[in-house]
Amino acid sequence: MSVLSGISPERVFYYFEKIASLPHGSGNTSAVADYLTAFAKEHSLACQKDSYGNVVIFADGTPGYESSSPLILQGHMDMVCVKEDSSTHDFLKDGLRLALDGDDLYAEGTTLGADDGIAVAFMLAILEDDTIPHPPLDCVFTSDEEIGMLGAEQFDPSILRGKTMINLDSEVEGVLTCGCAGGGRADVILPIQRAAVRGIPLVVKIEGLLGGHSGVMIQSGRASANKLMGRFLYELQDVASYSLEAISGGEKDNAIAVMCRAHLIADPEEVSLIESFAADFQAALRMELAGIDDNVLVSVAKGEEKRVQVLDLASQDKAVFLLLHAPHGVRRMHGLLPDTTETSSNLGIVRTTAGEFVISELVRSMFSSGKKALIAELRSLAEFTGARFQRSEDYPEWVYRKDSPLRSTMVRVYEDLFGKTPVLEVTHGGLECGIFYSRIEGIDIVSIGPDLKDIHTASEKMSISSAARTWDYLIRLLAELK
Image 1 (cartoon, rainbow, N blue to C red):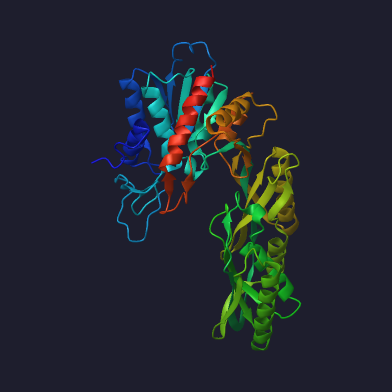
Image 2: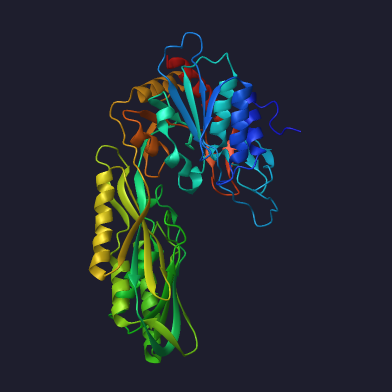
């Protein structure tokens, strides 16, 4: 029996439930793509599906709107697949088990996939309903957004008719997103030499930090365990002698590192000095980070004396230098948009292998020039230390337009419908909008969506009433874009 039967808007939730019944994790969206092409055929709509699994469904303007400028509606098909430890759900073949808790829609034991299943449902409900006035529509359903915007990156926008686009991949009702940062990963890979030493093994751990998404939370001032470890190791040199065996910190380049672990070897007489320094370092951090990262911990675990391979002195000096000087945090705030980060970097991952010391950063900026400047800074550090520099996963920015006819219309319609002014936002996170902005000259884009909570976790929820209000807003907008 349908969980969402009778909930308004009924056709939106009908299609949401249909999409939820199909496996559609990143890299596994073929079932949804096939459903979309079958839907287009059933409704006699032109449709194109490319080799990367992206689907576009075209609709003519309704009576009175035939000559209106075409509008692009866009969202992605894939979802992040996360489940509770106790769940037996198989994302490769099982549909989601939807459930309601008051106004909240969720999936039992797994992510809900409202990011971005609600966009797919909105578009299908519009396309099937001949009574909804709208201009000509290019409905774009991209694949694999959650693993690097791969579908959008490979999509050929020349097939689109429109130069005005509403993206449906935002998560806060009442916020009009009007720009986003571009970004890219930069790796500094330092070859290291090793030497054998004998001493007491020590594991220094910095943890207890809040972390967070490096786009959304970078301006919060939350500390990076990787950067703190660089400071710890550099300052420790003035107090005690040690050798660095290995280091590991952070799990993702787009997340602020919450833990970093350094494996040291020290002579027995140096151990108490290192332990005392760690206690003093924690006390200093507790004062510096009060109200931000109150629970930071710096610990030292001691092992039995042994002989191990450590970085030789020259390699250790270079590794500590890179860790200390690698840029991290907000570089500049936007001059025209209050409380908006313009350029930042996140020292997301630090690790050693037998022969390399590697740091991985995610650099973001609202302007390509800002990203270029930070990339150059990292590259110069690599060159200075004899490390190899490597760039990957670049994605373009979506620049805020001072003059946006679409945004003006959307603000006016929102005020008429809800009696209040929407929030205009430029996000420091990356969006597919940046790719469309970079490839369609003069395109005017705004992103909206209903209230979603805890996306990318098994606690993900969508507000039913917010989705209904967002639907009403979208339908009113379509009627105004004549």
